Image (tube, rainbow, N blue to C red; front, side, top):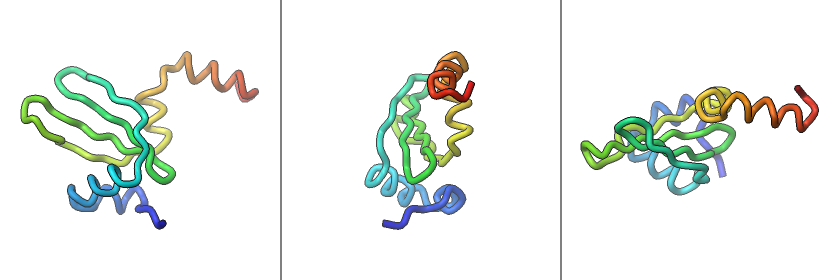
Length: 90
């Protein structure tokens, strides 16, 4: 199995992105954020954010993000520090 790179994934057609993430991605978690829902998937060595808007009742964005960006957005600083201390890095 050969996965897309982040740049190739993000430049792909919307339906290709959907096919890849729903076919080969692993669901991590979903959140409600303001007026939209965000679902995070792991795919290859990076993550995919899917944004669903109830205003239009559809997916409005599928975007690949790096591990660093996913950590900054979705891992609270206190949890990250605790994990790093547990593995002996912090």
